[in-house]
Length: 276
Image 1 (cartoon, rainbow, N blue to C red):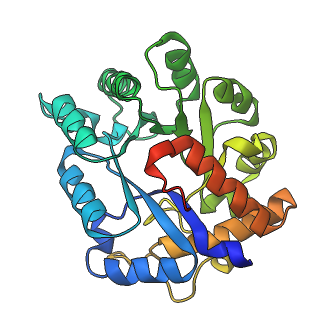
Image 2: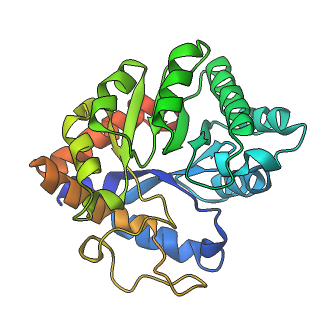
């Protein structure tokens, strides 16, 4: 990668995760050395929103998002929505991570739907984009998006795992599509088919750190291990993900970087500095 490599944007990750607690400054330093300039840090539950806020205020380049992940829909307090609005209005930020998930069992679909609809409505009311998690729930997701009129104009489907056939209908609803390092796995046929039909002006990339480690050849060497001995993904790996995605698309990595930055600016609007 050439001169553009120093201006990458990791469009979805979780720097508040405990796996980063011991060496976050070093993690950020490695990321910046590899060219990552901005980090879109997504909250997952009420208990981590304060940490996301603190990180955004304490470290340059961290852009906060506050949301209630479907995994935690059943743990919310009675005042969760008011608290979420408090965080979203306390600092320039986006909504996320929200969504639907039928993979995790048991699945409280009623709670998930209630929480997701509330966050769609709040994002629309505040004029903020929303980052969406969707796993094994695409028909359900489409039904909600088509019938729930109060939704934001811009949505990011992170680590997109839907079909190629859903890309255009989702794009017509205002969707952007972010792909993570699992796109580069040899068996990721479904994701690669979706990438091939993703409009270039709606494409973004992410690490989803500390999860979704990319294949070894696209990762920085000597990755740290988590408490279970598994390799910990980190934002420095975004450069490899960009290179691998450029190979799949058949375009120069520098050209892809320019497009990715423009797309991130269009999605996150005032949250992305003009100079990026």
